[in-house]
Length: 235
Image 1: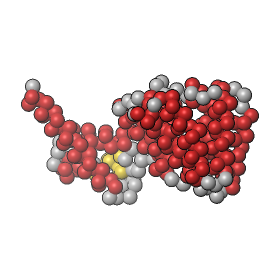
Image 2 (image 1 turned 90 degrees about the horizontal axis):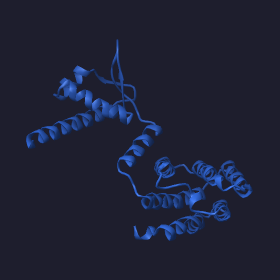
Image 3 (image 1 turned 135 degrees about the horizontal axis):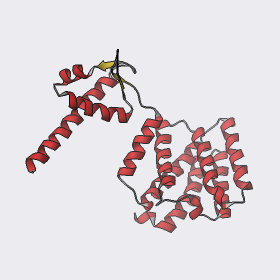
Image 4 (image 1 turned 90 degrees about the vertical axis):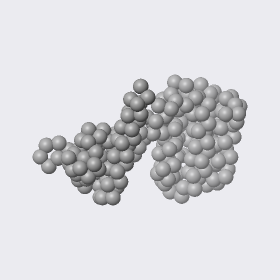
């Protein structure tokens, strides 16, 4: 039995190594470049055809490889788009399930930084979009609208910042929190009027273009509420 496990482990390692070598070849060439046919890659890497096929499936899932069949077919490199990256990160979080406290801890910290970054925005059109979101929040009289309006607020803030990696990480964490049964919407945490007041203070600080105040208000109005309810500081 031990020898079988060792062989399986060795096979997985060989596939992983082959995938890495293919990945390096992909990123060494412009997107859309053919990196070779199945027999070519097996010969170049001195592995079996099945190993290359298994490595290719990994890279297809990552969004960096396109397998074209038929005449002119072969393995072609590509670059993953944001949807590919979000899907991979979301899948990882699903495979490594986080507790409610961990999800809330991550998302509340990211929200603090998002608000601070948005306060540095000088694009008046983006700032006007945020004002309109603030008006819809103020006019809301239905607790069921907390979730949709919170999403609108987050989208408006994302449009105010030019930090692609930060946005990707934040969206994945927030999306996971919203999708996870263990981390329900904010309507289960805030009363409607409490939530409206908190978002008003946060938005006002952002519109004042004061990053420190925006982060302070986001922390006080959002994270500290979650900390008191879920003991996040003890996590």
